[in-house]
Length: 132
Image (cartoon, rainbow, N blue to C red; front, side, top):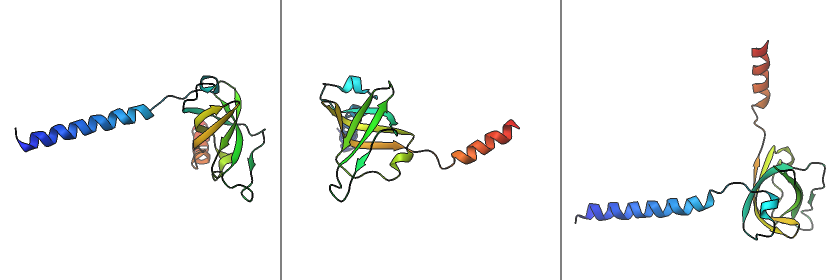
């Protein structure tokens, strides 16, 4: 067997292994109800409960930030992030938290914020001009 065939087989095997590993991370979003009691790491999409308190005091503990998230089913839970408060956090349209439930709190290991587009105002002006 030629060396080129061996190299091609090895490259195909590595590609299959990488795709299999990446597929395990491509999970669907859960809810707080689904995450409760499982102890597994899940991703929950929701919205920041702006009417609830956010706690972040970098002078005391810069790696402790708490806030409340309302998932897509309307359940609301306290989220604890052992990290700094993200910049422009209050402006986010949607929040995806990755972590696990611990009693009634969700311990987040990662946060993804989906912020409003900076072109949103321009988009609204274009739509209003088209409607006129």
